[in-house]
Length: 199
Image (cartoon, rainbow, N blue to C red; front, side):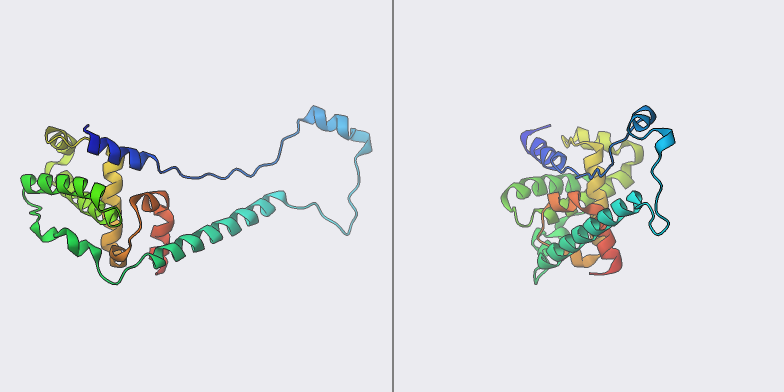
């Protein structure tokens, strides 16, 4: 894996999904007996009921998720530009029926990503499309074909770029976004759901 490919792979690996852990500390039965002996259990008044901690946690998580989705949607909409930036890549110059043409275009996109930072996502989309065609043409041997042409990335990374390309093809408005690969990788499932509901 050369320097350029290592840099792209590192950018992909840096995308870390944040996880939330809202839990109650557990108390063993022996500890509970020490705190409240069986013969001294405290009665609950008839006009009150125990709070449902599970529902309370779900409400917090639900509210946080809604705020997160709203934030991502607003950022996505604000990223849309007036013209389709993809046109600057000259996709029409790529022959998706010839391996040599696709490999050459793949490496051009690799290098361009290091130069055109604002428009990098669209080069990744082209790479995703190229990988999808190579995978279709060579079936189970597709990764070996790429390695023979000195294109060495993890299978997870390449498959993500294919999913990203499929998402952009299904929701064409995304082609107007100027957001980075990191943003789409980190929030992929949420963005997919936002698009499904309409943006």
